Image (cartoon, rainbow, N blue to C red):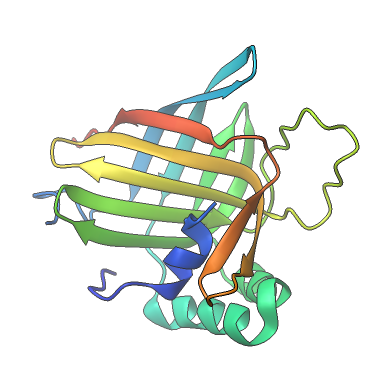
Length: 186
């Protein structure tokens, strides 16, 4: 399902959260992306596999948005956990279910925002940092007109409303994981 208006939940989940001719809105979609994290002198590389069966319905997106607006992060998380999965995000054989999938067309192609209601990984150099509350995996992809994909992934994140009402992403890691690849269609 595609919708032309800006999704409040996309802003909520992406801050951590033109159609592509013949590609936007074609689901199921399976992606294999190169992932890389650079922190200080360390570089970690891996492959992320993303399978999106379909985008979520507008009514379910509204439920998540209202959950955050009226009940904060806990309210949004509770709604996300009640939704059926629409795909998976997988790293090293460990998958998490995608509960939020939203596509936004733009001048260069489209933006795809995916959220799982469980953390996929915790990357931090600070062993004393508590993992409590970092319960989301967020993927924010930009798909270009020729199918080129760039984006970021936060393997353990939480969100909260900011002072101006715009939600703020809080990532467990020092930096988000960079993603890149290509959209391949049969």
